[in-house]
Image (cartoon, rainbow, N blue to C red):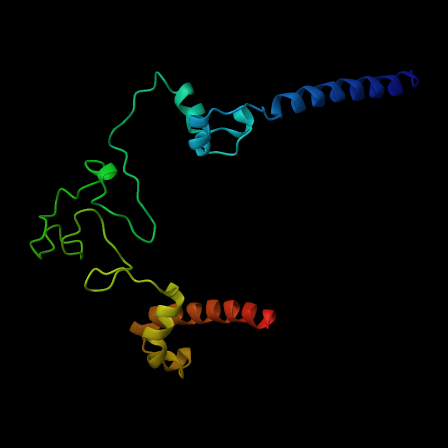
Length: 185
């Protein structure tokens, strides 16, 4: 009875090796010669299908031909800036239906005046683009430093404790980031 165990182990080993070979073949990348147009849109390609490290957009379109598209999808742009007057974006941007454009009033009462296409949190008061901006923890240190810099938690009023804790958290992030720079020096 014992001699059968080594045979079974060897048999299982052989079977598992063949499945690994099949798996490797299916995961290999294709090498496709791209046309000049395909080279222009290389970012749409798929790594496994085309051998080009893109976002697989062409693959998704081919697999989703019969899919009903929902036109109500809203995508937030978290970026430094966007040209809302660009010709390619006309009719494509979300518009706040509860806000009347350019009347200087917060019509939807969300705290932002004339937020027609969302809100720009990084421009200055005149709407000009800010070239150099700080991290949020730096803003917190500047804003609450004069109030909390020399105080301990026991010296802070109870209503100020959330701000004090946020200041302490920002100070910790600052110290960690600053220590990374000291290591480089």
